[in-house]
Length: 138
Image (cartoon, rainbow, N blue to C red):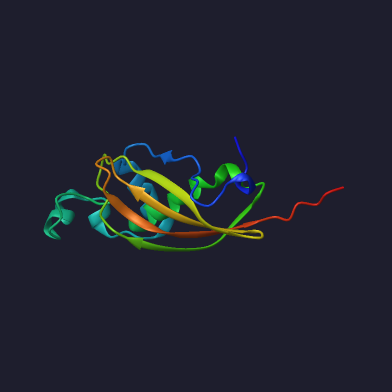
């Protein structure tokens, strides 16, 4: 595996494909986040709201973006991010997370990030600013 420091503008880190969204994922996320809106866990309530079925919390999808950078935590940290939600994530959707280097300046990498469903439809897009630790040479 390469390091983030080796990446050039236009290059991508390894994509992360999440397991199909399950009802239990969303029930657990409701408890962890305190967002108990029933459109995320109860079919009838989602249908009453005009949805075809329950939908994942947008923040569930956004939170999963961190998985793109998990293997790089020894190199630095996510300093900032900005996200736009582009579409809904439904039960059994398979979401793939992607990140491409948009800009490199000293110890800062700016990534374009996105999440797409199994049909290739974008459900989230945005930007992550990653700060790399300075390398101390002996």
